[in-house]
Length: 143
Image (cartoon, rainbow, N blue to C red; front, side, top):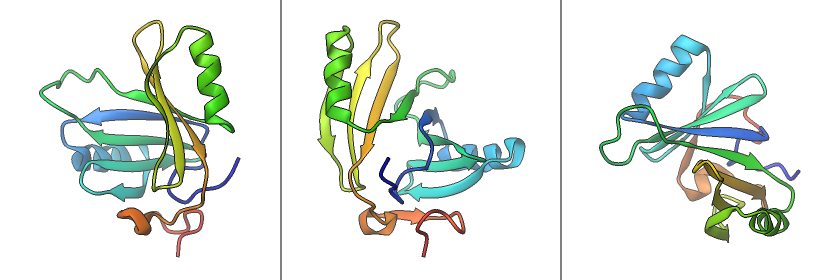
């Protein structure tokens, strides 16, 4: 899999919404031992734990019961993966799209209504080139 400084080096990445993303990231670091890796504007913070990762995102709307979120999974070929998912009945809600942070992604909903985003690294992009702030010292490619 292509390395990309703009995404954690983990295969499966839960994306969890919080009412206050900065408070949540600080709490996850203090309580559970996560480390901040990357801040993206004021709405998203990548956190790492050993070889795993999670993304804390600013919750949209008034949902405050802790539900929601999605799972991000890194794959080698997002287009082939999307085609397979559709053949198996997944409802694709966002077609494969290239993003300036070096990822090609699509989002689908499974039979239980859970949201999944599948992501293929297509370039190694330094987070500062698209507005991210690399926080974790020694993160892959950090300068």
